[in-house]
Image 1 (cartoon, rainbow over the protein chains, first blue to last red):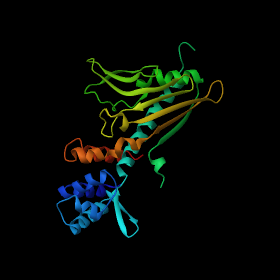
Image 2 (image 1 turned 120 degrees about the vertical axis):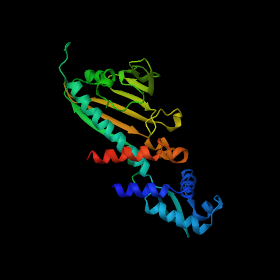
Image 3 (image 1 turned 30 degrees about the horizontal axis):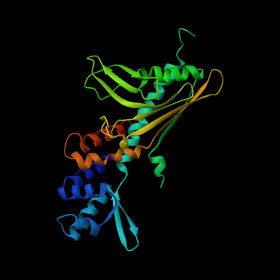
Image 4 (image 1 turned 60 degrees about the horizontal axis):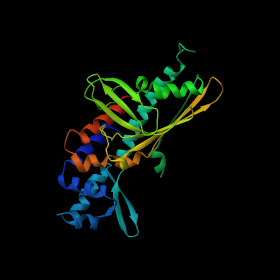
Amino acid sequence: MDTNRDADRWEALADGTRRAIVACLADGPQAVGQLAAGLPVSRSAVSQHLKILKDAGLVEDLAAGTRRIYRLNPAALAALRDQIDTYWQRALAGYTEAAEAPTEEA
Amino acid sequence: MAHTDAATVRKQIVVDAPIEHAFAVFTGRFGDFKPPEHNMLGAPVAETVFEPKVGGHIIDRAADGSECRWARILAFDPPDRVVFSWDISPRWTIETDQAQTSEVEVRFYAESATRTRVELEHRHLDRHGPGWQAITGGVDGPEGWPLYLDRYAALMKEGR
């Protein structure tokens, strides 16, 4: 992930309607019509916002029959995973040192 | 899609130590080797206690006596295995909803009398609600995406 992409995400989330869309999608994947029904904006406005969110990598769409279903990108999970991975990488490096250190009682 | 893999971190190392010692160091000296900046107390951690029993906790204690219980011990079977919960949210705050916590299993295998393989699996990361609470809750606040993306960017810069 590069910095530009992060900046895009920022911009994508700077809009109240787009945050509302993201909040709706946090409950589960939805089609444009479902999203529009729950928001005070038109269907075409929702489509526009979804395109921006998609370009920023925050949502992804999948075909479901004739409809497109939108869902949140698991990017946040990937970021969490990276944090945890780094955490254990470093913890185990320290652990190896501690476990292999000569012990007084040994 | 490798969804299961995405929600699991696996690590494996071999240490030159007997299995009993490898287990004892992991549980008894956890505070000595975990990355020090990862704690949720507002003060330096004076000690980390890994309570050696099911139902116990991993507790960070600061010099001023404040403490943070960030893991529940789910299994404690020396010298083979230990499992604990990870009650830490993606924003490094304590997660009080157990449905949104992940878990860590550490298994120890004696490769010889003096060598031990340690396998660590941190699983169910997706239970943390993929961090989306940060968005619905406080995307504008300093605890929301700003912090999250900063941390993420910092990780990337470390050039793993």
